[in-house]
Each structure stands twice: as structure tokens, then as C-alpha cells.
Length: 166
Image (tube, rainbow, N blue to C red; front, side):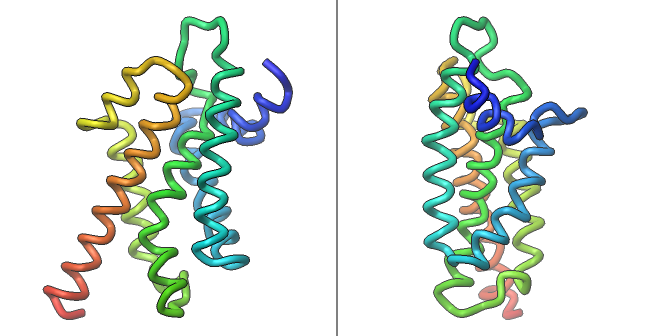
């Protein structure tokens, strides 16, 4: 594996932290997402998510080439991309409505917990992507988990702000 692929796949070595390297990858993604949002709003976070996906796909393919293990635990770039996608549910409305991203802190917690839940549990399409057994599947299962978490965050916000009138 090249040094660049290793650096990207493990997110600068975060993937070597134990226990639960995927959780560490998701945790690291949070302050970076906050910084990206502060620097460029939703557009920058969205662009960074796409870039993380594309670079992660390449790095994962390089890192797993010739290995029996299609998704080694130290590869956490997929968690970063998925967690960032889950946070789109906060970044978009914050950017569109001029809301301070920090004011949406309950959504940050929900996005993190839901993303980790879907990533570990692997319901429906998340499990399908994971079973592909290739680099694209490694990346897709986390993006799908992130999308599911984002949808749940939006639904929870709708219930809280709409139905409950808060």
C-alpha cells in the first residue's frame, strides 16, 4: 500500500486507535465538519464529502488489493464520509436560514449516534453495500448509513419543531 493511500484510508492514522476505530473516525469527523461548515457553509461540507468518498474509494482499493480482508478495521475514511453526509441535515438548514451551526447541537448528537447505529447494525441497503466485498461497498455502506441518519435527523427535527411546536 502506498503511503498516501494509507494516510487517506486511516485518516492520518486515526484508524489505528483502539478500541472501536470506526467510532474514532466518526468522532474525528465532527470537529472537521464543523470547521468546514464555518469556512464555507454547506457547499464546502458537501464538496469535502464527495472528495472524501472519491479519495476513500481509491485509497480503500489500494489498501485492500491482494488481501482477503475487504474492510479492515483501520480503514476509517468511509466513516468520515458517512458522518459528514449525516451532518448535511444540519449544515444545509443552518446555511440556508443563517442559523449558527452550534445552536443545532442536539442534531449533532443525533447524527453521530444514528450514524454509528446504522453503520454497526447495517440494516437493509447498508448491509447490501457491505456485502459487495469491494472498495466501493466499503464506502457505500457508510454513505447509505449517513443518508439514513440524515433522514432520521430531519424527521426528528420535524417532530420536535413542527409537531411539538418547540
